[in-house]
Amino acid sequence: MAMKKLLQTLKGRLVLLLKGYRYTCSVREAYRLAFLGPKYPDYQFQSHFNDLRYIFRWRDYYMVNEVLDQAEYAPAKDLLKGSKSPFILDLGSNIGTFSLYFFHHFPQARIHAYEASAATYAVLNQNKDMNPQLDWHIFHAAAWKEDGAISFENKAFSGGSFVSPNGKETVPALSLTTILASVPADSQVDLLKIDIEGAEEATLIGRDQELSRIKTLVIELHPHLCNTVAIAKMLRAHFGYLYALPNRQSSKPLLIASRQPLTYPLYHVEDQAASP
Image 1 (cartoon, rainbow, N blue to C red):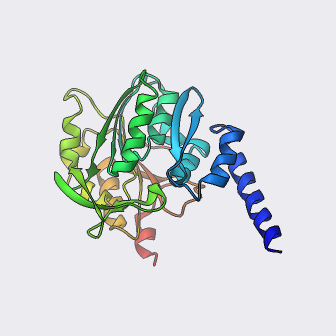
Image 2: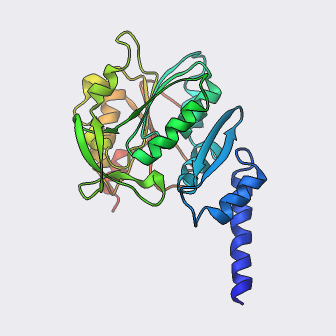
Image 3: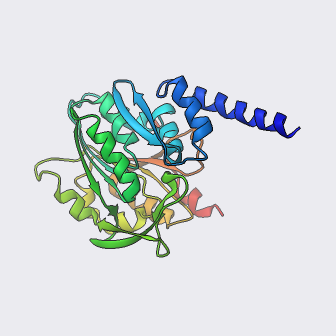
């Protein structure tokens, strides 16, 4: 009975992986991921997203699946149609899946990507080096309310790591003001992506002047780690329109803040405030 249960578990895992990685991972690597991943979470798997190569670890599984396989940022990509070389900021880059997704659709894009975790940043750096043709600049830093250093907690799955006073790793921290200082003064940021596990409140609140340089913003909110109501109200007041991307597997809201009306469902801040 125990062997039968084990075989059923392994079969289910393989079906999930082969289905989820059918475009980004070979069958051989899917088998390795299924059997080696849980035991060796830092083992590096070779993969590709269309014409772009990259590596990932078992602990990066969900980021690859959500961003590359499920293409959850496709609506944000559609907003850049007609732009040959958009300027994009990627805060909370992880191993670079968001950047790779946009580089595939906009090969001439200019992307500045920021990642806090030293171990995850090392993978991000490898992925950048595997694609030298891209205008990709990466930075080891957490987005925060001020420049300096901050404690950071690494979780078993890299996408859940976050700024925490109990974190065992100390990482560089940069304010949005400093991050935007790396953008040429005559350039507007076409898209700012933020997925920083609760640090969005500290990074954004009180930054109206900095946000004036951002054309469109896409952000994942983390209701149990910060005041998401305050963030949503600020974004709607500053940009004019705030939309929720539908049909996410994750329960965390993924929002687009835009200066022009779009066809997506409006995000109702009042409903969020009223929820438990």
